Image (cartoon, rainbow, N blue to C red; front, side):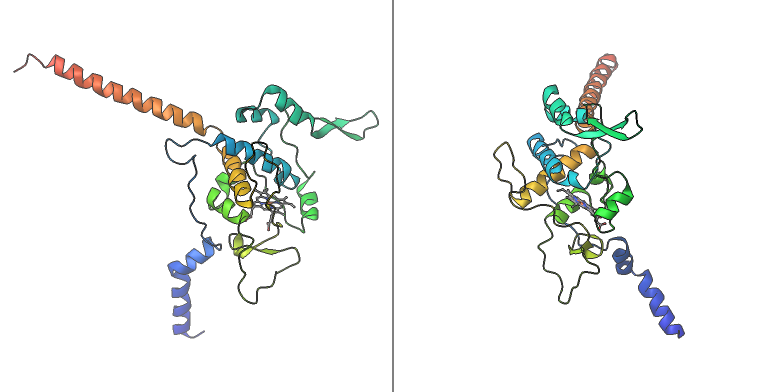
Length: 255
Ligand code: HEC
């Protein structure tokens, strides 16, 4: 390589654009307003409940959510009996029988969400070589966060650039996936889920609700933290006023 060409290559590699392309090879998602953002944010629990329905009816076929137990669903506003019924509808590994063969049993509130695949190898084999990531903390650890999860779920209809060919069978064009391609088939469609509260199940609504649910799961103590923050602030304000009044009193006869 000639020195000038080498210098040009170095300059290109060091340019901010090249760094950016390296760290974020996906389209920037649009920023949406999420109720849980900001210091006073809180979850829209009706949306989180619908989001659980989307997870249970769609995503759970491929994605595990191992950090959650069925008992955690009580915090969604479900009664103990509803939680028990949801758990009892799932069969989890239950040790072995007296011949040493693996058996299953109905889950209880103390069990973690049933994983759809027994191992990462089994998950990869069923998904064209790609492993669906565990969703317990996805909203927290996924680069781009909730905005990008929503954009990804609703981004399959985007027009690929002219001449685009999937790099392997089972790959889909999606501008919000890394390198604009993903091995997850479009999971959501209009009417995919039956919402019991009468909300129309459009793809956008399903995507918004499941993203709210994933955020709720990833930030389990958000509501408590915000409540505590407000209480601490009020307490400090009260102390400030008290200090001021005391100071005035103590110095009142010093002229
Ligand atoms: C048919 C199986 C299947 C279903 C159903 C499914 N996924 Fe996936 N998902 C996958 C696979 C496989 C991957 C890994 C894709 C890859 O690495 O290319 C994935 C990856 C993801 C990712 C990470 C994408 C990335 O950029 O790495 C997110 C976010 C996601 N899924 C969300 C969801 C949500 C939310 C649902 C339910 C609405 C859902 N998935 C339903 C199979 C599925």
